[in-house]
Image (cartoon, rainbow, N blue to C red; front, side, top):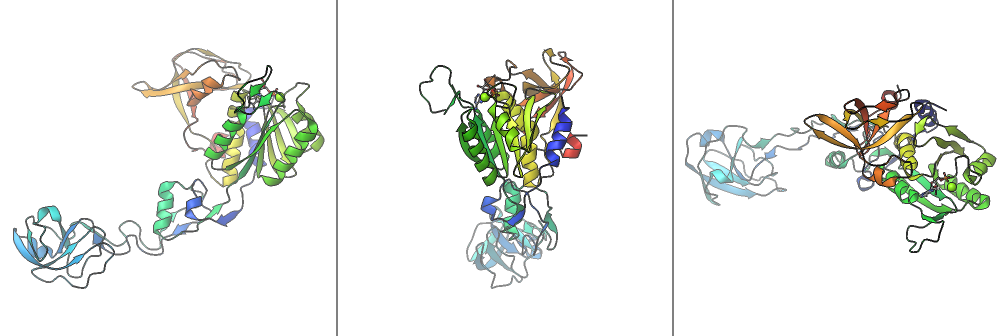
Length: 410
Ligand code: AMP
Ligand code: MG
């Protein structure tokens, strides 16, 4: 059996990040920035009011109340025509440029809100409620570094500096295919005896898309070498990465194994992990191929350990692996000491810190326990038993990646 980290290293060495292209902001969520983006001008671009109120000279409002003449009305988006001299004010809205001569804003709440004259009821100091040019970002500074995966706030920053077509790594296309004569589509109403609904494909679609890639669905392939060969050929041609489930263990009908053996380029591994020991990896005409086991929990665990980090690498992200935090097991857990075991757990964070409780039966077919889990408690090779109260690393499977390959595979 291969140690898990060795298998992960070998997989990641074979996966390369995708080329860079310009991408509109609406399409860029979850993609990785491939360039440093610099602000071409100050943000805000001009000094402006932080409040609805009156632009005044602080010197005029040091003794209150005082009445000033209102020169004009400045909504956001307009430009001042008047400059503020002694005894005068300009009515101003949040975001409108500061008129010349004014050095403070008096909020409307501190006035009688007048239109031709205004009574100022509270004093103001120079600089009050003014947003300076460059107060957020100074012209010429780098606002975002390459390697950042773009979230909503990052995309807002890019919009504010006019970087409407940032250079990012292209979004990966990930082909997914279920294999097995027993599988029927999830919509099937009456299950014939011996058949089961295909659950892996819908789970894979969503984990692929959650990771930031596009899932390309190649459906269900029966255990038929001709059909399988054709489906794998299409998938490899159209996609940047191909994931199948089923057919890679030792059974006589494990045809994925047979067909891939004939095609060449793919190896069959026994990884020292549980669940997910049988695993095929290699390339189909240059496209990375992952043959995951059939059991639904094995699929998700193998996906987390191998496919997801590979998608992150295709995306150009520096962080490839989910975060791990230390937690306490609330129950005794006995595992196979020859393998890295991923115990499906539900976590809680209370006065005792993070605690983890197995979320159900741990069989590799028990999808309900995975659905109830938000972390894997990772029991490393050699440990075997975790007693209640002992500390164990928790891999947080709903948190975004934070660990680089160097950190995770050290
Ligand atoms: P295999 O690796 O093909 O021998 O499959 C192992 C187990 O996983 C068998 O019980 C299969 O019926 C089940 N299985 C395989 N593919 C799927 C799927 N797409 N959805 C749900 N269960 C599956
Ligand atoms: Mg099968």
